[in-house]
Structures are given as structure tokens and as C-alpha cells.
Length: 466
Image (tube, rainbow, N blue to C red; front, side, top):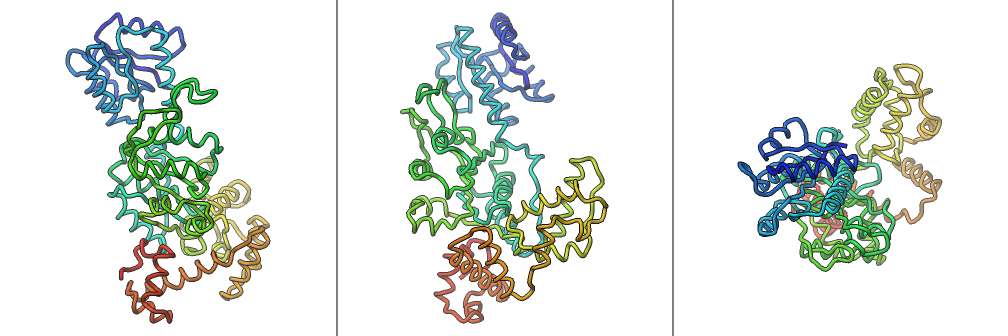
């Protein structure tokens, strides 16, 4: 954990806080001016910054602005005299975590710093450094459409709904939209609404006030506050409980929300990107998802293709994953034989890119030679490859059998939608996006193809225009 920085031109204040932090075993650094702290920023940021507001030279507000510009996730506590209350309010507008009025109780000051430390560590756990962001790879036409969409959407703050099967890389796209957009310097915060227990999800999203419920011993900032000015990624939004759908709708509608147990409305300057592997229209029809929330989220829809729709990308992705696994394990990267690549191109990959990544890691660990042959593949992969048919009707039957074996049900609508989407996408590609000509190729009317494009989410992916 990095140290806490104390910045104050009053030596006695620095001394008091240094002794208190030392007793608590909290590492610290102290500075007599904002300029000294700014110079130290070149060597790295603190875990928490505690700064006086009025000092000779640069003020605490200027230091706050510099910190938020370079290290937006670092909590900043502003120390101020009661006569500086207006300045403290200005500090909050600048992104301060809390203010500490002088004269202060030392124990209360340490307790506040500890809360800020906990908050800083929690935010670090959900923020991903830009340098660590994995790449999105793909040369297939379906992925080029995704790249074009990212380029168009990155400079917008519009809400985006990313759809696609599990393992297709929906979170990678959300991170790319953030990284290439105007909010890149601000936090990217992700939460999987399906993985969070229902009774904790509300507090995780919106935060809670001290005493809001049993165990709420201190104020906690939720993910909306953590993502202020940046992007909040809501994964598996289709599984969000109904009562929280209502609260989320309010945030998207008027930009305000309340902490659990709170009475003061908070403003949310956050770009929301949601993702789901489910058919939200079907969830709406079944009553499991609010229709008004669906339309709020479905401003721009971006569909991630399944790996079987971009089989030509398998060699590129496999080389990337094998090289990365080799770096992690400190070994030489292995290579897939042409025979293996040909077979993998026919593999169903129910887990999509994530399954291919796991397979490459397994091969790096388990395959004995540098060139991987069919015999080196896991038995479940070899078995399915051997049975994989080449005719499209046989391939469809094979896919149905595979899903039935996995316990799937109600697949008619999903497979029908995939079938129609593939037909329309290819027809539009052949006609350069001209819908009338594409409709004629498919034997349907213009109104029908327009309705299908909207229902299947094709029109937002760049396949063509009316």
C-alpha cells in the first residue's frame, strides 16, 4: 500500500498527523507546500492525500485539481478552517473525498483517513490500468463491424447495450469504448450484477449511509460515485432484480440517485454501458425486465459475434493466447499445426473466445512438444471435432444435439433469430447495405426486412441504411 501524504504549511499540523499515523502503522509522507507535493507526483501517487486548503504559493484546490487530473482514483481530504466552508464546498465540486475542519479531533481525523484508505483500495480493485487492458483482436468482417462501431461510439457519451453470447468479449468492448473516449482519464468501474448477492447489489451500486442497516458502520460510496466522470459497466444486466431496475431507470432518466438510507440526492455524471447474453426483448415479454428500462439502455446496441461466426480469426487469437500464456509461464510459445487449426475452425466453441483462451493455456501447460498436433488436444475437443459435420443442415442438427446434451431448452426462437440475422447480414453485405436489393435476394418485402433489422439489432451495427 502506498503512503498517505499530508500537505500543510503549518508544521504543528503536520507533526500531529505524522505522530497519529505512525502510531496506527500507516505509512506517510509530509510536505510543507503544494509545490513540494506536485514535484513528488512525478515519482508516484499516494494512496490518500490530506491537504490544507490555504497555503503560500499553490493552494490545496490547485493541488486537488492536479491530483484528479493525473490520478483520479486517489481520495483527497481537504483540511479547512470553519471560515473556509465555501472553499470546502468548492473542493467537493472539484472531486474531494471529504473535508476535515480545523481544529480537528485527532482520532476522528485518523478514522476519516482510514475510510479513505479503504475506499482507495476498493476502487483499485475494480479499476484496470490502461496499460493492462487486453487487446481486441479480429480480422473477420463481423469484428471489423465491431471496430467501426467502437470508433463511432467512443467520442459519444450515449448509453450502449452490448449483446452476445458468454465469452465473446463484451467487457473488452466496454473498456475499449472508455479507453478511446473523452472519459478515458476518469475511472472505468465494472460490476457483474448476476454475480452480486441480491441484498448487497443495491449498496454496491448506490452506496449507503452510516447506520442505513445492520453492519453499515460507516458511509460507503457506491459504484456510481466511484465511476464519477467516467464509465460504469453493468455486466449481465438481464439478471438485475426488479426493484433495482426501478432505481437504475431513475438514474438514467434524471441523473440523480440516493445512497441506501440517504435523503440527499446525488448527481451522476457517468456513462453507462450495459451487457447481456440474454434476449432482453424476450425478458420484457415475459415480465422479467422493465420495458422502459430496456429502451433507456437500448440507445445504441452493439452485438458481439460468436466465435463460430468468425472462425477465420481462430489462428490469430490462438497465436495471441499461446504467446501470452508462454510469457506468464516463462516458456517458449507453442504453435498449432495446420491440421489442428483446420479442425478448430469446425469446433463449436460454446464458450467462445474465452474457451479458446482456456484451451491455449491448457495446451501451453500440458502439450509435450512445441508444435501441437491433434493428439495433444483435450479429449473433449478431439471428440467433438471428429463428429463435426460439414453440410450446414448437418451442422445445425449437430448444434441442436450439443445443446440438448447440455440441458438446453427453448432454443427454437434463439436459433431462428441467429438464422435470420445471418441471412440478412450476408445479403446486406452483398448489396452494399441497400435494403431493397437485399430484401429481393431473400424473397421478402422492404417493410419486412426493415422490421427484422430493428428486431435483430442489425441496423445499429453498420450493415446498411434505409
